[in-house]
Image (cartoon, rainbow, N blue to C red; front, side, top):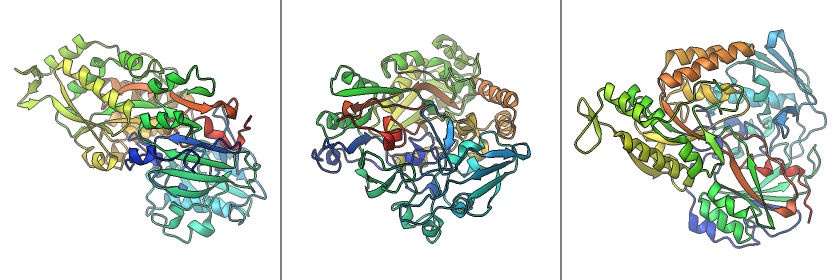
Length: 531
């Protein structure tokens, strides 16, 4: 499911376990801890990027700090110019996008930014040799050309409605990245961009340290030193916040709740498209059985998960599209009904055995469900899911592991994943459900295969008409009721706690990728500290 992926945070995914003991031992005042300086901020995040190169997927949805895209999002998620001087001019029935570039912009090494860097970035991403799992999101792009230094023209194969959203993608410098191996070069860990911050150091499994770019075209940030401490364990993140080592952190609802009355802290709840989901791999004799899938879809208590696991900070999920989105198909909500779920299993020949576990044709109704180690929300969702499944006569064996352990097992084992993007339904659904992407990294982790869904996804992607697209996505959502290759559980609000000295901050409607590019620090370059 695209680089962002339902694995964790995709391009920002936690591919490496964090050593909790080491994280907990950083002392206040060092570069990984808050020192209270007016021009410094240290925040705790849960996931670590796999790369800092936009050519491999870093920052593709914006807010990368080191880089800028042609466009960016404001607080209301509306597109506005960044490296472009204005919004694009669209012609040729939606198949030509022309961008006029901002003049006088330089990369942080002092070299001038120009149209050739834009062409280089997009052509490199689309190159077959480039290991960027998100390149399918640029499928509509036929070619990109520079007209002088200040104009870029994108030519599309078809009128891809959300194309402008894809031009928030960060621009890399050709004069540096173009001289390296795109997949293994130093640029992946020592990037140079046009953004408000430059990378001082990336200490793997520990922290990312940034400093303000004094020559940033948007003005030098007031926060001169910015550190993202990578702390996978939720409890450790809260402990370090209490100890004054962090100025802010993302926390699960049960841990964020205690700061609501704290005079020195402020809590922010960001609405999101972020969901938690169980993959039901087609290659598993039990999880791939349509009757089992349908039974689990109505036999798990989503509301109980929202109430008990999220403390109400979220809502039930019936697909990748939240129920309050205009793209949601009314009538596809699934009412919790354990009795009906059992009948579906009975009618399909899944009969209870002596131990209470159902069987069919000598196959026990059991499968393994993996979740990412240290992620309490995933753990709680997985355990609740297994508990509800057990009541139906299905044994779900819950296990934890790193992504290195989990990824090879995805074709046969279920995974407690996450995903979601507010920008456009294509970003959510195509890489999640398209059968041709099964086995492509973390795209279509369930190996879902439905010809009607495949056609609807293509129809929606290639139409510029809102009504036609809505009809196509209605088809997708209705097909997921008939044969749910995933059990969607909850949509989660993201909760953050920050020091009040940073004043009143804001959040955006957030994607699944959270902490690194989202949260109250989505626009840290604009912060105005009050103390």
